[in-house]
Length: 391
Image (cartoon, rainbow, N blue to C red; front, side, top):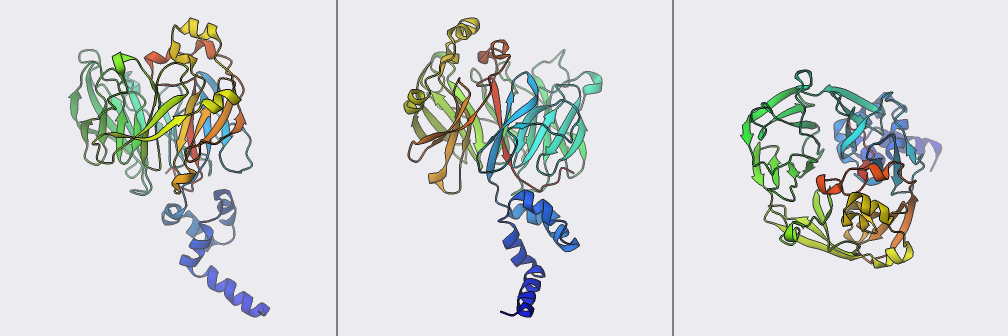
C-alpha cells in the first residue's frame, strides 16, 4: 500500500465516527483522556455522553477506606495498571469520607459538616453540594448515590431525612438532588416506619435503593416509581437473631449477600436477589479453607475480648464480589487479618494474593460491628474508569 493509500485509509477512519468509536472504546480511559488533544473532533467525540455509554465498565480496582483512619485511601488494583497504591485526591484540598461509588463516579462527604462531593477519580472532576437541612441542624439518616448510565446519563443523590425528628422520630421523607435539574426537591409525602427500621448504608442496584435491617424489616425504594416495598431476606440468615451477614453489595446489577455459618467458619453462601424480588437464591457455595491454611493469621484474642464479639474471629473479611461478563471469570476479594487481599475464583476455587495492606492503627477502637452495617474495619468501593461528567 502506498503512502497516499495509507493516508486515505487513516482519513476514512478518522472521519467515520462509528468506526472510530468502535476502535477507541477498547482503549484504556487514561489513553482516551490524552487522545482528546488530537483534534477538536476527537475531543467532541470522546467527551460525548454517547461515547461514555459505549465504554466497557470493567472494575479495575478497589478503593479501601479504613473506618476513622483518614485522609488517605489504599488502592487495590484488580487489573494490570500502573497506579500508586496509597491514593490521595490531589485535586481536592480537604479531608473527606467516601460514601459510595457507582459506575465510576464517587459520592463523598466532609464527615457530616454539610457538604457532599461527587467526584470522578479518572477525570479529576468534582462538584460540591450542600446537604439539605444542614443549616437548620437537620441531618440525613442516610445519603445514597444513584447512578446507572445504562438507563440515564444523570445521577441522583438521595437523602433520607426526618422532617420532625423531635416529635416523630420514625417519620421520614426523601429529598433528592438530580444532576439533570441541578436542584434538590422533596419527594412524596412523609412516611412512618417501625422503630426497628434503620436507614443506613443503602445500596443502589437496578433502579432501587435497598436497606437491610437484620433485626427488623428490610426495605427497598424504587427510584422511578417512588414507592417503598418490603425486601425479603433469606430464611437462614438470622437464626435466633445471631448476625452472620458478612457482605451486601452489587456487581453488574447483580445484588449479593454473603452468609457465614458461624465464628471462624471457612464455609459460606453467596446469595443473589431475583430481579422480580421474589426472593434470594444461592449463587455460590464457598469453602475457603485453603486460604486459611495458606495464610493462617487470626485476629488477636484480646480484640475479641475487648469487643465481646466472637464475630470478629473470622479468618477473613469479604471486601467485594466482582461479576464479569464471562461468568467463569467472576471472583471475590477477601482480606485476611494479616492484611493480605486475596482474589478467589468462584469457577475453580483457586486463589492468589494481590495486595499487602498495612495494619489499621486504630483497629481496637473501631465500633462494635453488631451495632452497624460495617462488616470489617475496612470499606471497599469499586473503581471503574469513566469519562462521565459530574456536572
